[in-house]
Length: 341
Ligand code: PEP
Ligand code: MN
Image (tube, rainbow, N blue to C red; front, side, top):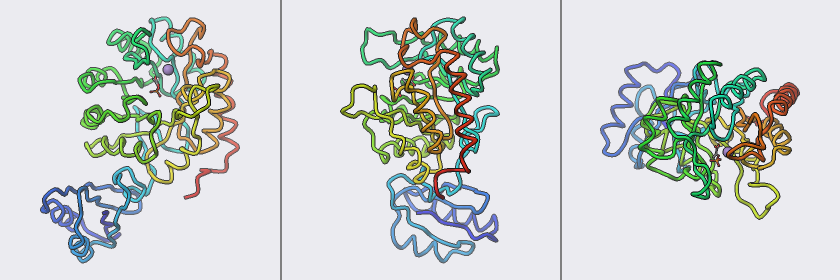
């Protein structure tokens, strides 16, 4: 349930509403202040008498039940788009934000050269995996903390903030210390202890869609982070399993407008993991932008043939520069947000 405050309500009336909610066992108020209105989300199971009581409280204009299982992630709870600030980069606004870099951190030269090149082409955030979830235990599983340190050298050289994956609750503090956005990978989207742990931080978190997750399951994963008190959540569509084997996964482009309709959270498209082939990355990236994505996650490597992970889907510096030019052209051709309000 959400309680919508009247436009002319007073701060005392808001406090009264919060107190009435907190007095009920198991219920908690979550205030969301938008440009247009203040809403108070009631987290917990609401009884019908509570709904009736709140409708009569001074300063309340409306009481709306949220029928969806996710509450704080829903559009009803927060009608305006959420903007997640990563340093001075705004994710969720009109400008698409491109996050680019190698699948895995390998060495200093690789990271610094990639950071400089993707920055020159217009990327705003640097990616690189140090803790890698790999299907096979024999594959390269990342450099761990040494990799986080190399990411920070590249950050010092370029000023680009860092996004990197965290795989276990026990690593959250360390990874948070060395990064600007915590990535929850597709394979961990339903690792509820990890979602709780990143929800305890106040860092930006990107929740990638599970390989076989429905929109509802994915939004409920985001809800874990929000319910922990961390508002800085973004979503990432990275392809889902289908019967097709030419592509690595199947990019669900419709997820972008669907998430924008159901939720206020920024949505990023990942054409690298969803396709698995470098020559598909640009066309699918453009489809994500045309569908209204707030940004892209793109794998770029100085020498894809020698990459320790995901070389076949990695763009060269030159191909990434070309992609960025085309992204700007498609964005420029759109008349505002393609998703109807
Ligand atoms: C990644 O972005 O590094 C990654 C492993 O992606 P996913 O979790 O989507 O497979
Ligand atoms: Mn990868």
